[in-house]
Length: 452
Image 1 (cartoon, rainbow, N blue to C red):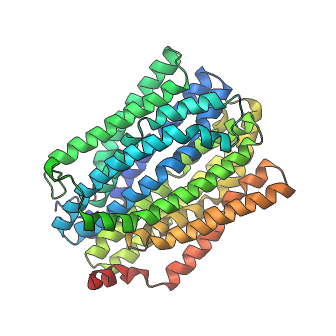
Image 2: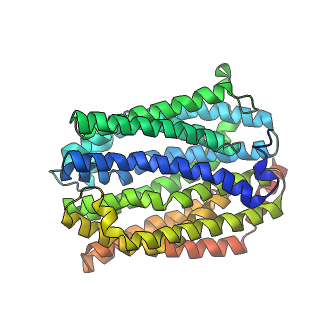
């Protein structure tokens, strides 16, 4: 185990956490940049219908992709524990199983995405003038779904062993490719929204390929050998045991967000464009949340594998505090500059009004969302993946959908829909806090190991 990859289980906690989280932050930043650039490009070079089609894509794409990304997170937890405990045989079998499983899952997601996109878009109440471009964008996007799944699977492997730098380097390359192809296909050749999605597909394929080539050549215990890529039944069970709850959590939340998007669609294409533009900006606000929740899951997994409980608690306190503080700072800036940020996408003034209204309702509560994600990451790293699944299912799905179903009947306004997010974040943060303080979650790994 190299000194760099040992950093999470020895030495300065804040330094180890920041050095791991920073490349994750930058990776997610570049990921968000090329998702945002699609919306900017079609909004400025095509029309408002194209902007509405692309900008409203986040919730539907996340609904299809999120379950498989949760499985990648489960694989990462198993690998991180084995790596921290130096059980390299277990780690090797898990990695090779994860790769072949990712290929199968990616192929399935491609079929589901291409086949069911029109049905889901109609169910969401997508306006007729936007529907053709929405179908075109989604179908081209899902043709490359296998690349998305494999990239996330490789990222889960790299993060589990403490390497957050290489996925970042490869994402920079793919982002540059995506931006260049967007400008060529959309701005230069005027090929439409399908070309923007196709550019994303090609760039994701490049990043997945670079990750695969690296893991084939790396001189480390997690190196992959082609002839060993196959299913190992016991390792697959562990991946599913930790990954399925995370996948269900992600997909259920995304279904709730699709319900939210369907209610936004009822207010017309300007609401779709404005709130969709906000969703692209929201991705930037979530960056510190995502990077620290991922860092915490890996940190907790490796250090519990190494039996360092006190170090775990110190790391949890530091990572959660940083994430919440950064998220709230971004929320305050978002509230201040909301109209200018929405206008960046070339939206009409009516769309800017809707987007600003939605953003200012939601953004001051980012710290609660950050806290929920961080504690969920901690519990996943500790092997308690079912707990955040249940909490988020109840708060971010059942409560959110129930609230919207009832409240919009009495107050049919966009702000009524917008309030679904702050209210559900508040409820989940309170429940996570109570569980974190009361439950004996930190000894879960030790008990599971003794039982095994």
